[in-house]
Image 1 (cartoon, rainbow, N blue to C red):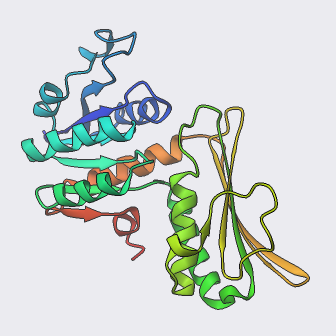
Image 2: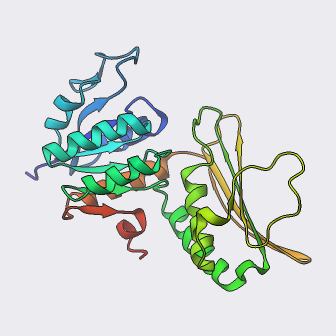
Length: 263
């Protein structure tokens, strides 16, 4: 009988956490080892499935697992990542909104364990970033680049991690520094659009799983590359693929394109 990999889900009661847990049920090679939530969660101690109770004890839960998946807030995810490094277990991170100091620490922790960090686990979204990069490489700054994203009204960070990745793809195609040309806010008399800038606009409403459009606007025409998600299942499937992949890797910091073999 094949030994199953024990998976800890962090943010287990969130939208993505629930989707990941549901996909683990039929897997032959993976099994849910633990479910983590914040200490304030009202359902702590409740049994979710087959003896798995919702917990906030990161140290204990990590010790029971072979790999952890996190869809949570930045600071709790940092606590989980540190515990994973201490226990030498792999980690898959889908949390967004990290600051530069937190990202630097994750990179440091990846010297001890394999870590996959992705703002979006969808196969098609990762393909979209490659298409955007190639379009930007060809069109250069002759076409104005704008990124518009729409998410549900419970999302706490903006712009989305995926929108930022798409912006970086445009910058990479143009061979410029994203942070130097990104425009995240426009209000009042802003003046004319700065040549070569990359605009990002965040919309929030309803229960939208996620929509992203990259627009290249030129004289008399525009090219739009879009992705629209109606459910979260494909994001969860991607996280499972990343989990199966990362447990076979040596310590290091990886992204979803590497997981999918997209370069």
